[in-house]
Picture 1: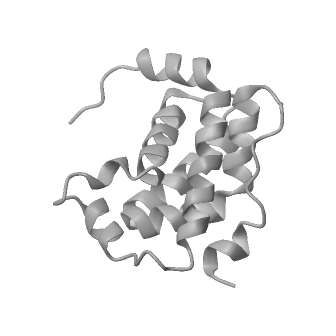
Picture 2: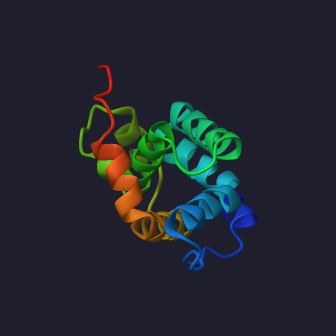
Length: 137
């Protein structure tokens, strides 16, 4: 069994909790798999960001703006939106993963699961992101 499969037994669409709770549960339930996926697709900085996201979710109720930003960035990473810049670290990491790598199917399942969870929290998440002050460069 490959590393992602050992931590992802089944990725399912979050139950009909409220959208924010379902998103939190998805991330908490799949934290190890999300961390491994982030490391494969983006390196240690992205893996550390997942750890920090999980810590935020444990310490704070709801979703803070910072947590929403991290969720958005994680979804971009898992959806391969960050690989279009061929000079980016994410493109370099992605280029090292062969299409027949045993983790590819699990990466896709995690991306789909997170996308569904984000869609469930949609209005709340996007309002937090829209109302957030711009990030410093």
